[in-house]
Amino acid sequence: MEGYKHILLAVDFEPVEIVADRAKALAETYQAALSIIHVVDNMPIPDTGYGLDTALDVDLTGEMIDAAKKQLSGLANKLGVEEDRLWVGLGSPKLEITRIAEENQVDLIVVGSHGRHGLALLLGSTANGVLHHAKCDVLAVRLKDN
Ligand code: AMP
Image (cartoon, rainbow, N blue to C red; front, side, top):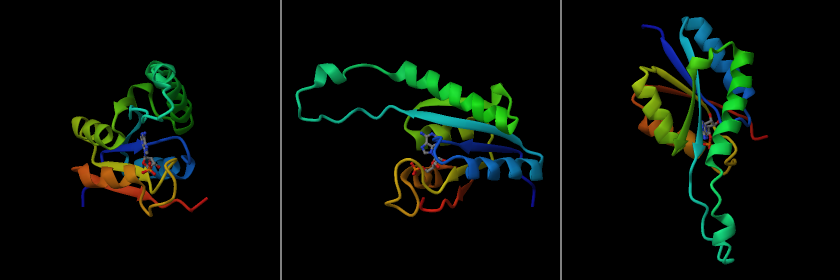
């Protein structure tokens, strides 16, 4: 079997270490390029019913993208990943992760089995979505329940 050439680590920052370590170890094993992606989820804030539409109509997208870039840089430093291998997407995480993977000839996507979105599902919604949309291999690193 041919080894992996380009591994994409998808992070939502919490919990990240065990997933990042696994991606790094695999990249070393296969002498593969390692890239990292975080997608700023632009899901609209649902109508709260409080009549607060004006107060909530604040676009924090720019700030969120800047904050994500800073966090990604920190992680990239730790993992020894070059700045030009960092991606900050905007939109649906599963769609952006798989789109960037396809456009950049990624052959393995590494995600956590679940992330910030809770433990209700054995496999979190983003992990599940990536698994169904990706055209390449996907590794879901099993995370303990706390
Ligand atoms: P979830 O399905 O949201 O519980 O998250 C499972 C895994 O999907 C996380 O551990 C990350 O690896 C990845 N993930 C979730 N949300 C994002 C995001 N916004 N950007 C990049 N990766 C994500």
